[in-house]
Amino acid sequence: MKLFLYAKEHHFAIPSFNVTSSSAINAVLEAARDAKSPVIIQLSQGGAQFFAGKGLSNDGQAASILGSVAAAHHVRNVAKAYGVPVILHSDHCA
Image (cartoon, rainbow, N blue to C red; front, side):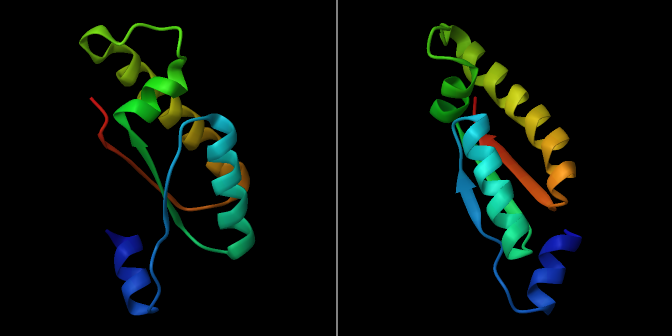
């Protein structure tokens, strides 16, 4: 919530990007770092499934859940190295 209040006080929007892979996440983090901007990283159900790997069955949304968790771990660890504040949005994922 603090990040949204900060953006409101300073009159800027926080950009949001849908991702399907670690390379897409890294590209978003690099761009956010270069722009000196916080960022929202989003995962859809299909995007999270793709993150886990197309070879996995998504019965019971298992691959979507696995991909969402894997992406969250990646974002949490790599965002620190980029020094970028990140909001992770995965509520549309399983």
